[in-house]
Length: 313
View 1 (cartoon, one colour):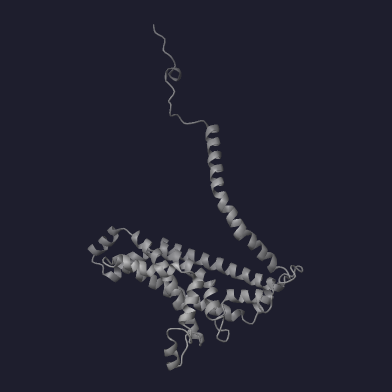
View 2 (cartoon, helix red, strand yellow):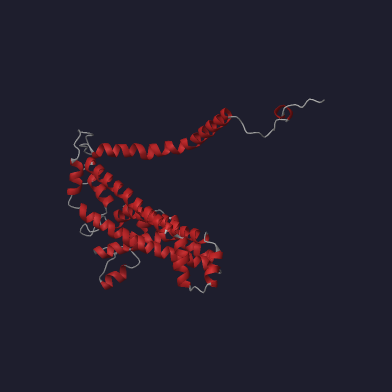
């Protein structure tokens, strides 16, 4: 008779067996610690450049805080009442919203058209992409100064025409608005074109081929294929464009100084004026800044949810 060993004793242990639970726990902790160490520089950067200034603005908005003199005590909610009661508050909000809507619609439509043009063009593709993208390399303040000279009725290239025809680019409210919008479109169309181009190149060619086989026209393909598959890119560009337009400051500060007749004052210009010109009141300026921040958060959440719902549909 031969004795048989138990199966557990006779079977050799596999070299690739699953590690024990304590080993997996230690490995998970090491991975988590490594992740936190990688994220620590960015977290410190955000804390120093966003968290601490935000805390200071919140403290200012709840305090009597003149520009010269420092914190004079708690006065919530008086600063918010004074910010809303400012005589330029409603006009600046209305102008900022009007400027945001016009700029967003024009920029998105033009950038999508440019992206489709440089995507389909073959011979001049490189030249067109470079030409449209070059203005994006120029800073907004520098571009505003450049257009300030172009619009000048004295030293600008159109000074003779303006003198002969009796008009100025920045002399009327509508002229100042559309002249500034032209500057922004020239400056940012190439940047948004690049984002749109990336989104278009991410759409599979098989989808367009299937649409052509089904007999869809170019317009039907654009409406039923391109736009639905481009929604994530459209959501990103819309959020960026709306946020940038609501926070407009440099272009109007350099080109119009809020004129003519205070017709081009944006909300951020109003904050700057309350803080450093006229009132010199950091408390009221901080309260208005908090209001703008909350409005931006609400608007961006609404945009993201709207695009997300359309994508699900």
